[in-house]
Length: 500
Image (cartoon, rainbow, N blue to C red; front, top):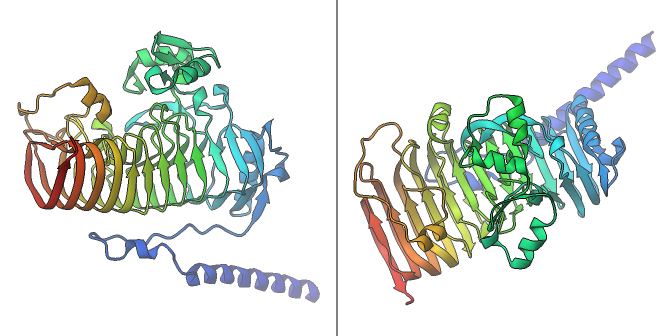
């Protein structure tokens, strides 16, 4: 009996020592991200990478095969369930193509892709149930995201592999965005519906959903049967993180998403480091990153290459966003590159909960439609304030180097410029909770070689853009700048050179 007692005591001692060692490691390990929150023009606590227990499992332990055809959905679920029972840990995905349905991350877990590992999400809508969620700032229903977490704490996606959302299966296609060869190939790959000779939908259900939609959110659907009739239209964001705390996305390639690529929503303490988020330039609603109603976020050393907005800050749309009332705040963007896309760094248009305390620095935008893009419209409400942008280099900007447009209507800047459409920016409307406001924005050390138009500031007459400070801004462009409904726009060493 005494031997048994001693053994039990020894095991308890070893457990306590192990736990103490883990705690010591958590306390003593230097925080490499602390430097990003030092000397900011606003108060922001340091953000740390999540702590993941040292338990490890491999996806092959649960019967998965990386041959590109065997469905691994059950294996991923079993793996995360097993880690959850252990208190958390790392799921290792080795080299191979792992074909799967939705993956759900659990608290205290890390999805780690080794070099050569590809997680390919299945092109099969039956694997993605319709769930209640938020999309484009509105409460609605969508198909479950390929990779998701809801209410999780301490989660990470890391490694040198790639995550592919099989987006072509879900997305519509505009003929103007592809070559003739691509148009013929893509529209012939699966059953689809032509709305016109220049617009193609991937299914009849998608076409029906589009006919019922306000932007990308269908209206008037009451029953589950009605929602299922338009299921393909409810294409999901690829990475959906809702209400999570302590999040790390590091080193991984995220590509080919059904809709938005990465969408942290109402999350706290988010680190996005050295990732590549990319979509083809013809991807409809293929935003690379949409950070919505999040607090304390670092977006650093990453590359974004998309057919829509690159790095985008949001906080909900119209009444839904105002009811949520959660601003996107305390965000640092540092050392990032954005290719193509509608905007390099973007605020809006869904900003009804407000946006504040943002620093963007040391970035480069190459070939984007707009460099710095601020957009909203009447009906949104919300306040965008204390935005600080510095040390930005741009080249070959297809539209404006810097845009403030409070008449956003869903079109890209290029589409608006080419259409020649005008807006009534003279008639004032009553100011109420639906009136958006942009104020107190500092922009300095901006260098742009070749833009179509230099600067475009288009505010509301009832609520002008206010307190915009431009310092050391050098832009060469085909067309000079336009300023409408602005107050206290200061310019120090602003040099605009016309190329035509």
